[in-house]
Image (cartoon, rainbow, N blue to C red; front, side, top):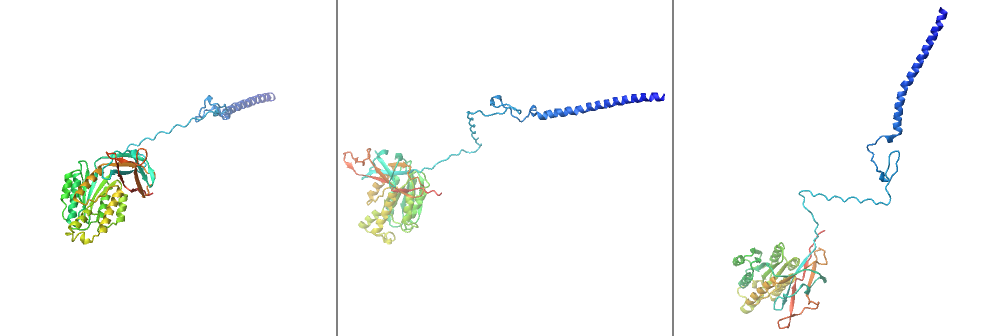
Length: 412
């Protein structure tokens, strides 16, 4: 029994083991195939990255002209086509509350008042722009503006009123009243008297009665000094702050006694003034004529006590004549009482009837140098102008203009 049964069991056990091994082998193969597929899928994705969509990659249209590749089409610029210009930058927006800014170039403009009168003082009013030639330091200038001035005036009466001699005081007052009577309703006038120092009698006003009232306040002064240079400097300095053309009617003997400034300093100040014309009226001639005919009695503490000589009077006249020439005014020397009235009539006419010529200088430097001026009058054909009276006789005339000006000085 035993010998027959054991081989049979062994055979059955061997068959069972073989089946078990086959089952384990199949199970092993089945369990190993799943990771292989996963790895294969991952490997496939790695080898073909184009299959995945890159969100940062820009799509290139087919008309870009480039070929395709594993990573998609790429653009190649077409030859012969210019790139479009970049768009213009936007205009900056204005910040609320910020003002607009602009650049201004300061071009100098020189204004020259010109009087053309006959020897008798009659104003020649028929001239045109083409009849004038303006020269600065010898170079002819192009006239930019031209007009005949007939407008209200701005003037200052600067009156010498010191205790030198009652005759001079009387003449100064008389001359001041005469000029005040020539004023018109639109004129602006101020009155200043001086002896040792200037004293404003009336500030600028259009009231003729106020001027008269200011002159009436003048009383016998306590000083015999006549500090002309200091007083004129102070007056010019005040007028520099006023716009437009101004006039100074200087009623004086021209004698300076104890001014802090000397003649050179006041002359430099007169040269540097702009838009100011000085018309001096000498009352010294009348004093000299009076002394020759009546004697200089009553001058014990005045001019006589200062030892005035003929050369001193001539120097005084030359000083005032220089003030007139430098500014384009006229110097008057009335010798008699009636001459004073005529002188102020001429001044009133000169002030109200002038040619105003303006030009931009060919030398634009603002260097503070003094420029000499010359004004000529020519006919329409460029030849020297000839003036005739109603009887067709040649009449002599004179051209009155300032001799020069001082250019502005700009410090770099």
